[in-house]
Length: 277
Image 1 (spheres, rainbow, N blue to C red):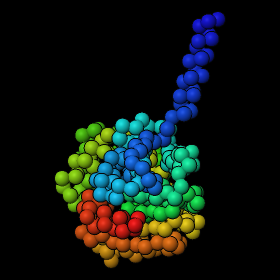
Image 2: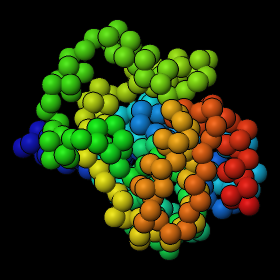
Image 3: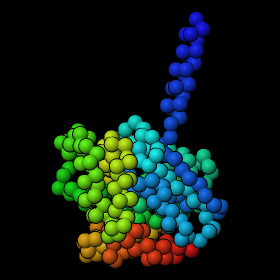
Image 4: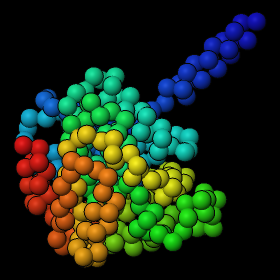
């Protein structure tokens, strides 16, 4: 009877532990107005360290790392909706007000979700090379209904060896930043990721279309885009995708790929500080 009792207790605590698992880890530093830093796909919160060190020291910074990336254990998939809900809950539980969000890539998508969900709490956003619908850029001819999780590419990625993934990650790093000294950092982020989260999480992002949420956003927004492959190509994409967002300014970084904070750091820091001031 005792064994049954203790076994029951263990099962209950195990269930509670699973139920309370977080979709993120967050590092909080400083005092002042809250800035939430949301990294891009595969990146840990530390990708924002240099940006934070170049801000005025009058903010409380919250650096998020998502489950499955960095050192944060993976959670059940699909996970994007869980991330958006739990980060929103974090803002409300901490009673954060007049919040600024700075999001890169996927982090910008989460920022859009949060600003639409919490219009009274989010006052400003900086969206760094982020779009509300990435499918329209990477595979515009493919209907979203045809994007499945169990597709040949995903199967191949799940079965790939670590060495094969490293080669793929190397090509991806070259396409995301002009700074060759940062490529290994980007490669390591990919290799450190939970494989299922890396493969199927990206499919989740491809299926997202947040453009209809833009009309509900009240936050003042600075959209920073990269000019790769050219400003003539990228600027119309940003203007079209953010057409429903009222209170915005779009600026394009020259000589930059996806990681603007790597490729044009001084320009980036100046634009962010000017916007926040």
